[in-house]
Length: 241
Image (cartoon, rainbow, N blue to C red; front, top):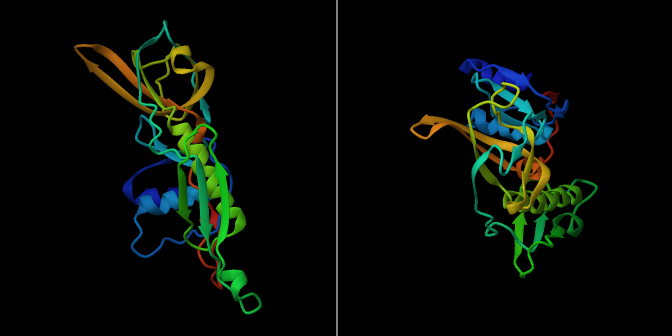
């Protein structure tokens, strides 16, 4: 409901493609906040993604909420691939720190002392720590969720790969679309019939023919950032996302 209201003035229709049914706590747009920033904040609370379809509609759903009919198979429909596999944004450990405000009954050192949660990435063998300051009101759970999110998303991002295939459509006649879960067989890049998520689709038609570039990665690479609550107010507004 909120997403439709935000998009309506721009003439953009909103489609529900499996977005989780969740109530968002901080639904009121902030002063000076753009529609995109407001929507991204709400998506973080609902743990949903937003992307556009071939009709220009705004689609809401979980990562990989739709399934591709055709697999990407090396030696069959894969013409070429491109992958960086860079670990420059990946770290051996993640430490998230934050603070919470006090109340009339709970104040002093217990509230101003930093809350700390950490996790590691076994895939990074060199000592390379990363510290993140949690904004807003921090809790043990929010800091734990943030550090786990950072480790999972950054590790998954390194596996992103772009494949080029012939044509714009799958075997069943449907277009290749973002957010489809697709089976990938590409042993050269370590994918042995793994289910990945299509993050981006680029259609082209030129002297090289009719082609589609498909960027894929593990679902963890496209997880929305966990919701970071602000300091509590006397009145909170709730609404259906």
